[in-house]
Amino acid sequence: MNDLAGARQTDAHDSTRWKTRAILFAVLLAGSLVAAGLAWSHEHGRALAQERVALAHGLALHAAELRDADFDAARKLGTAAVGIHSDEQTRAGLVDTLVDTYGRALSPLIQEPSHEVTVSGDGRVALSNDGGEANVWDLKSWTDPKAIRKPDQVPPLKGREGASVNTTALSFDGRTALTGDDGNTTTVWDLTDLAKPVRLATMEADRTAQSTNGVKKVMLSHDGRTAVIVDHDGVMTVWDLADRSHPKRLSATGSDTVPIRDFALSADGRTVVAVDDHNKVAVWDAAAEHPVKAADLDLSMKFSQSATRTAMSADGHVVLVQRAGQIEIWNLNDRAHPVRHTTLDLSFDKLYGTYDMSLTPDGKRVLVAGPSGSGTLWDLSDPAKPARLATLNGHMPEVESVALGTDGHLALMAGSSGVYFWNLTGLDEIVADPKQASCDRYSAEISKAEWARYAGGEDWSEYKSEDSDSVSVCLIDWWS
Image (cartoon, rainbow, N blue to C red):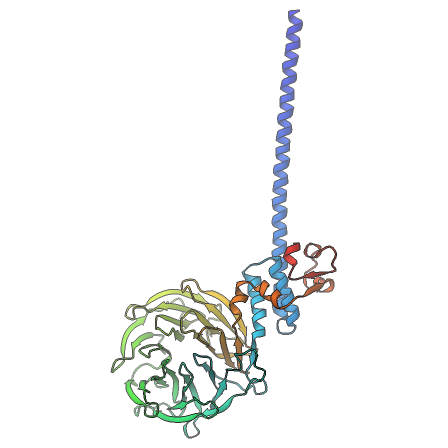
């Protein structure tokens, strides 16, 4: 009896052990299956996410290719791309497509080359220079979306005694203009009545200057009371225009200096930042009886190409210097001790660099034109972290000059096909949410044939509602 009981007890223990082992094995097997399922699900999800990214980028690329030829198709594909996968690439593409509708030629019937454009701070008037005379544009109706008739330019400003105009400048209120010509003479104009420009006075070049190309660049303080003129010999003269009919020369920085390539002037006319032909950038105190150099900017020597352009905020605290496809952003709170904020890589050709740039008076936005028919608008609200806002397509082979209005919502480009104008009042909303901005203005669908043409064979059932035979670009992320 004892032996039988012991055997039964042993069998019971063995049975319990086998049951425990079976349960443990089942648990381990289930755990392995779950882990494998999770791994497969994760990998499958990642593969699907990669497919969505590839599809979105492909649609964004097609949208960019169609932007000039078929705006509706470009907008639909761009909106779909953002709905499928919203990232910097798809959002930037849709922003550029939408912004393209805000631009138009100032004079579509007269598309003569223009080498320079400038705009008054109040956005009332613009000047463009075609190499012979300065065209005057009344922009009031262009900035008013309700205005039906867009006036052509008003009477042009001519150089003295038939000389060709090289460069122009405008006061902040647009009532005072300067034209510098190849006769080395700068003329002061009253533009209070745009239909009847009045020649007030001329400012002759320094008698020691022997330049054959005349005036290179002119600038005005915001109040129009101070003018700075640079000629092709490198002479910089400062003038008092308190009485515009009788300008008074305040100073002339000698002709033995290295020629100045470009310069910028603060709103009060007291600070000048000048780039010379030896790749030096100097900060000048122009308020002194004889301009005094306050400091030199120590440019990065990463590239050997020279600095070519400079720009400055109205208060003189933000300075931009372009060189070799890059822009260095400087802080000039202390003119004697400039501090470099950061370097903005524009991805332009290092050989040709930037053709021109324009900075808003507050220093928060800059429009940059490179060796192409477009310009890029950047947000410099945080100078240490510049952010791209949009690309403006000038619809011309080459842009030579750009200008921004005070708040950055008015932009102009001059180049081989004349002058192009943008009213960018709605830009902030577009940049904040390009898909919503697109859907607020348009409602569209992508047909099955269009999907087959542009989606690279991707199954469209994931992106449309069950009872529809098309994809609604504004609802695409609801179904996906």
